[in-house]
Image 1 (cartoon, chains in turn purple, green):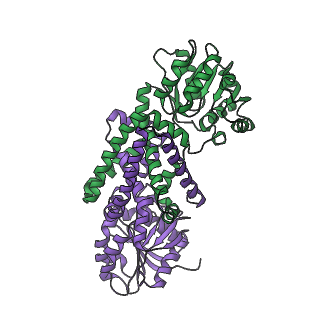
Image 2 (cartoon, one colour; image 1 turned 90 degrees about the vertical axis):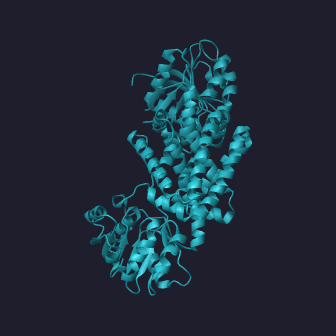
Image 3 (tube, one colour; image 1 turned 180 degrees about the horizontal axis):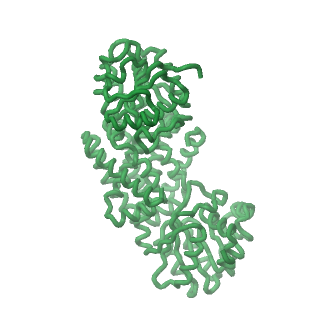
Length: 294
Length: 294
């Protein structure tokens, strides 16, 4: 590890993902100076107390001043306003990246607002937990996980490489792809599973009090895993579904069709159809174990 | 720990659950003698090699001879034939219990076939993993988990207590309830979550090869947890859905209604409705953590 990768890094948002990346930068001295920016002073006080940043500001324009790297790490719905606020204050040659789960929306909201000479490298570290806030981060969150970058073809290759190198230092593996493709793949691997988990936990939340108490009591039998996923940050996920709407609805349609067939098989007592499906799904699990992502 | 609880215990089925309970009995010397019974000699050889049983037989009638405790630990669809095979060989005063996930079906298939003087205490340890077979068991599987017993009102209280004591020795907490209630509660906490997990993993299994490869690659983003659940034993789960059909279909109906509403909220961009649901689901997770079942 030879010296900092960036002189001055601004984090716009310092929650689970932002603070985890800041921890990596602190650990390996990858930034000369870190500025944290958040909506509330309370969050900034926490970030400073945790030693995640050297300075802090609730002003985006203030925070990005002089930064050679800006990391947007806040919910998708905030991107447009953040881009507008930072645009006049950005240094020529600065790199702007993000960590959001929907890349089409990031490109649409940020790219048009950035001044010429500033490089936008959209990114998505495929990692997380159900916890949120600056206290929830940890410096090994990205280790062995993928970080997907979705730059436009015209984006400066040197800027892309510098962002890639940062994620490699965090222990991540890099994949570069088109944002359209990213949003379709993530709709299946991430957005639909979260939607389903939120839905089933919501179904339980609507049950009468007594039954709900029992469901919680006997949660160990499968339900528990869904509640963990459905405990993820509400605002972040609201934004994911609204910004990746088309891909999510398309995958949901497939899921619903398949569920109808499964329902029919149960109603009609089609034992072979059920066993066949459950055997095929076991093979998918094996693929994930073999890919080292279990 | 003062001497064995049972002189001779017969396990009919020695997979994940059966072998875990056998391990507890070995560890704490709770049985004078353990007989394992399975359909194949290969399974029995494994069980013997692991030291889970003193003797083994592929014959149910042979295995239960002289046993004061018989534990049925095989898929629900096998119960009727097992009960018919053991009935003539059971010792008067013997206790028969099981570990199946559906209790109505256990009662319907076993109770009518047992001779007078034999006590049936249906049981369901609410614990498990996605692995199966005698090698998959471990003696702490039931620690801190619930074991639900669903005896009829007329069942000998002493027999119920002896089964309860066995599970307490395994580290489980005991809950006694009506089998109808059990099957309804488990349909929500366990059967529906498994059905949904099987379905979403099935949807992915049907995707074109290339996309499926990418889904496996980026599984860490949520999908992974579903694949673990959907890797559970296919035959056992086929039987669960077929034997608890009514309760599962009823819960599935609620789930589908809720999912339609969620789909509509996404399509119409109803941000508040989404955020509200995702906030309520987070509270359910907190309930599970507070209940010590996380």
